[in-house]
Amino acid sequence: MFRVTTILATLTVSGAFVLTGCTQANLTASDAYKVGCPALDAVAASGSVVGKVALAGMQQLHDSGAVTGEAKQWVEVSIQFLSDPNKVSAEQKQQLKDGCAANGYTLKNV
Image 1 (cartoon, rainbow, N blue to C red):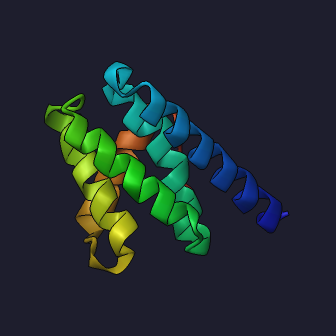
Image 2: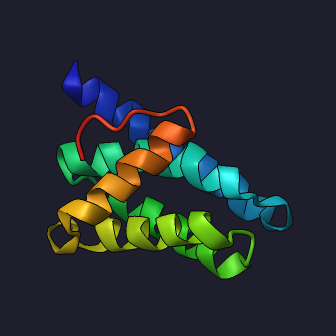
């Protein structure tokens, strides 16, 4: 079951970033949470390939200028987590959890 969940998360994140990339002009701060939160959970659970896809997508979102303020800080911590989860402090992990929770997603593996 865990394997199936990880595969589904990978496909969801991959598909979302492909679609997001195609419509980069329409990126919003909520896209960061809609796509980022499941990606963070998938990476934390399995360290899978989804991390590379999610990292590229989050970097693209960051560079697009579509996110500012608190959402931009959340994206920056997400990028750091996706790059190397061991370098993210407990405070930063809590920031990720809080950002996801505020946007309707509960992180289970971070």
